[in-house]
Amino acid sequence: MSSTAPAPAATAADSVGRWPAVLCWLAVALEGFDLVVLGAVIPELLATQALGFTPAAATLVATLSLVGVGSGAVAVGPVVDRIGRRWTIIACVIGFSLFTLFVAFAPNVALFTLFRFIAGIFLGAVMPSCLAYISEYSKSGKTGKATTLTMTGYHAGAVGISLLAVAYSHNWHLLFAAGGLAGLLMVPLLWWKLPESEAFRIAQEAKRNPAAASATVTEAIDPAGHVDARAKSGMAGLFEGRLALVTIGVWASSFMGLLLVYGLNTWLPKIMADAGYEVSDSLVMLFVMNIGAVVGLVLAGWLADQHGTKRIVLMWFVLAAVFLAALSIPMTSQILLNLAVFITGVFVFSAQVLVYAFVSAIYPAQARGTALGMASGIGRLGAIVGPFITGALVTAGIAYPWGFYLFSAVAVLGFAAMVIVPKSVK
Image 1 (cartoon, helix red, strand yellow):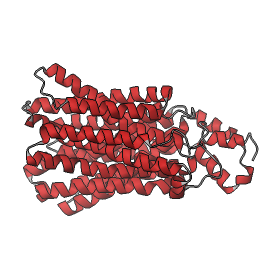
Image 2 (tube, helix red, strand yellow):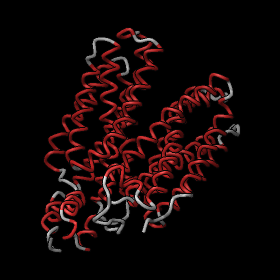
Image 3 (cartoon, one colour):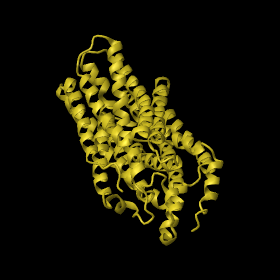
Image 4 (tube, helix red, strand yellow):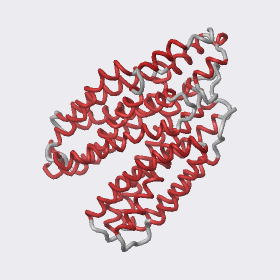
């Protein structure tokens, strides 16, 4: 293969401008919308006993939805590394959009649960696919900003459904239909404006003909230089040489990171209400924490690209631990309390996303999709465990202050997991 072979692809990619970045952001926003919509409608489903919903049925749906998300994240890795980023993203958007629409018209709890589980599989596969794509599209070798900016889409989608639910929670069918239709309307844009990742195509060519893979090809696959054209793909690529230590560390930190995110998003209003704050103020705190998350994502990405992703990941986990512990201290000033919640959100949410940025930067293109999918899938186990453990503390009546001590300890464990990870695998 000649050193000029990639040029036509680069020209084609340049012709679509910023469309890939915008479309990946929108896809992740739809994921945020469709994942949060269930929590937004459960109170209405239970209040009206729609379709025969009971608290036990709602718990089962919520749990199986997360199981589907985790399963999709794990399963998508080998797929995205085999058939490509473009086709995987398009297929996932079609899949979760259709089954979200089916949920809107489900005639009973059983089919509602089944459709939600299947939609969850496709939803879980979207984010790793988009992050693998966007880390290669940026071409700068710096994945921090590209990853964190893309993940702001998740919070935008979550805020969007929260606002819609205020006005339309009484019509839960409409909320699911809105998410499904929005995804289907995006499919033609994905087909038209989302080219295949140049890095993936070159990696596939190098895999077919490794003897012809030149230094120019290797640079095109990953500008950061973390690629060997002979690198293994799929799960085998995650445990090759020093990458084995990386894999163990990022799996553990992903588990801890999403335990924090989902534990707080699920139980923060209840914990703060138990602490004696007004329920309305507790709901405001959840909103403030998610606003802090968006700010933290932008700031964390910029700092990671300037000073190294691992260094900022470690700093973010430590600061998350400090401010989570600080929330256990009673505060009489509402302004001071909301400021503390905002700052906590800055560090808690983006610490997890920085782990994904680190994964995107350190694994070769041949295994990047699998690495992101597995990190996300293992993290989703934390997403299930977090609300469960915190709920047990709430049931025992000790969620305040012990819930915050637990979260602080989890952040310390996330820090410890990343400490063992080497900064490079050269």
